[in-house]
Length: 432
Ligand code: NAD
Image (cartoon, rainbow, N blue to C red; front, side, top):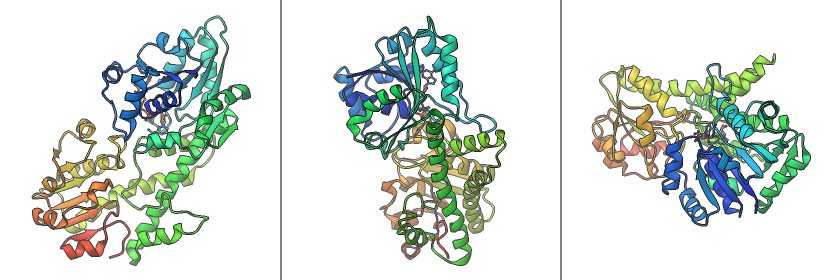
């Protein structure tokens, strides 16, 4: 049993801390957000993540998992400190390291015994060295420490399972001994563990996310060509995916990637490349194609409805992906803003993200279910592939709508079936 402090109780920190506690460690989860910590102490989950609530309850109940806002309490017995704070996009696309800097300074001023500082946040290459420098400058009495990079690859919606069954655990440090101590924490997972240097570990995370985002933009570009030439991108992707060199993952054409990682990480990598004299043409194209997907979706509506003012558009799905309530950089936000800009009125439903959506999309009508959304709308737009949208009573939906226009931004449905129900159906890249 090891003593661990996890700084940041967000999507990554809460999952990391809870899973490390579940593996038998003593974990203190620390966040500067008093509201979040109060909720956790009261047994209320601050985020929606399948399976997490039960795991938090069990480990908090056994005393292995505690929550605090105080660094003194978090670091008191800790041997390891994980940093899992936010690193959002700055004005130029760079990663904003404010939270990492504050966390590093707080660690330095409070630590009074040797610590292994493990960085889980996605941070620009060189940040590990920078964190070490901050600690060096602010620590008291020359207390010993080491910095290890341990980027996180979990996906919201399946985060617990992803953490517990990772494809690989990446550890980077100039201090091999410290990296091996962190590796011990992961041994119960029986995962492949890669130990490398700090900068390489930091780059593995960016390169992985940028590659996955590139696959999505690639298939979206193919989808646009399919639409013009009468091919079906869903079948194209399936046909490509059987090739072992390609594989089927991340080949779903749609309204583009969103969420708190892909857009910001591709932008941050492009920014890093640019300021170091590289010319990241591919990364820029990935972002441009992604932005186009939002605009193409609006254009499909214009083609069918003409001017959008005075029309009511129904939206099914607001979260950036299914099984999460995360609205950060969700395609729905940009698409709804573009629609509102053209004068359309919006009705929407999402199974879990509506509370968060109200904060960023205050001027839309929130509905109880897809049928209430459909009532009286001129078009229905599917933006998140929630399972519950797969088997709706489409006859009832069509009858409730003012016009039977269905834009399937996630290619959830079979075009022929939807046309047979009487919809004017448009998917993404599915020929016509
Ligand atoms: P988040 O915004 O959900 O959580 C960050 C938390 O850190 C917040 O609760 C915030 O209050 C807290 N915090 C900020 N500054 C602090 C400080 N000085 N001291 C203590 N707490 C502080 O963010 P997230 O989605 O969990 O992402 C965290 C990091 O992990 C980011 O770098 C992200 O890119 C990376 N990441 C995220 C995911 C994902 O799916 N969300 C996956 C892999 C990696």
